[in-house]
Length: 431
Image (cartoon, rainbow, N blue to C red; front, side):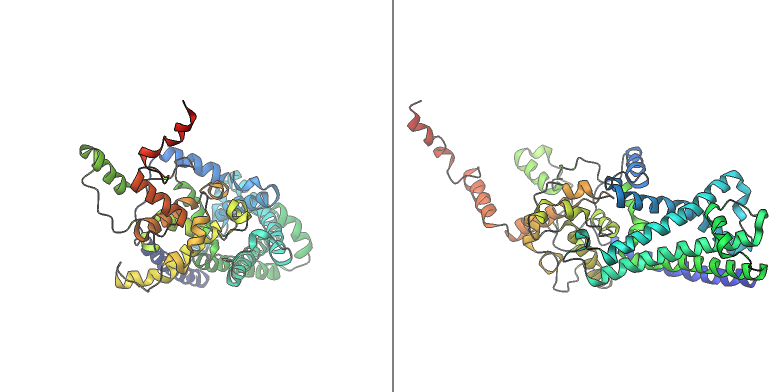
């Protein structure tokens, strides 16, 4: 009973802290604008199965992609065992879901094998980060704290797998042929680790690893929302909420489109459209909930920047930095907006204080970044909205574009000559 009470106490603290953190994040979502209606559920499920569960995009990189996919699939299987541990901890039972028979054997056996695979994969990931110079892991937006964050997360996953295998090894040593479930890897390791160990010693070994594993899960779950590895929770929902239009499609501003329709055909305009408080995006409160969801889902893998033609040719733009900056800016300004209202200002903004005009105008909107992103983050639409703010509210486009805008306004065309002069070049043809 004492173990159950201690477990219940720890579980309540874990859930309480996690609930507080999530309520804070959801309050940030309330500061954002609407994006698009979530329809076509069947199509979204197919995309989620293919891209998120099937890891179709990540597998385009044969070596690291396969390792990442194995870690992802391993976590999905191992989560079943974690759920069982919570039930056992509360009810004082042991391997309570063993009543599922062969299904339990398959899942627990797979989890035991995956624990070893994930452990090896994490060692490879850590070695790459610590000893190799990987271009994708560098950039202005990759601060020292980001590298520490990544190494801490990987180390915690490593310890989770070690404690999981340790717990299984202790269970095998305790129960011998009367064990519930199958443990192919732990059974083999037990022959080396617990051989000659007394029952008392095996019980201590099992209990230490059981508590270490469940406490690491609870701690890890509460660290993740403050880490770039929050994508463990957000990647699947973010893929489900993917934009369904073709990548090359750039959405119009609905209210501006209505204004144009009103000028051309008053009957076609939607007169009930809400007023626009700002054209485009200047700061975090102008972004949409999907922009912020993308920012939370970004794990800073850098595959977007690695294929960006602007970044490859030495321009300042890094698509990854756009969402790293959005996440950091919301963290900085969000609490002030919640406390003081939507009109709160700290005399900073996402544009210029975080993202420069040079970065925004370097984008070619080729969509290579969105195509490569393993979790369907869409970078060009946010960049386009920030450009819209610069052009429509500050007339701060590059000189070449401003000249073109002036020509369109004066001549009805992007060229400097008026309509009456357009055919002058034909006079010398004697046609």
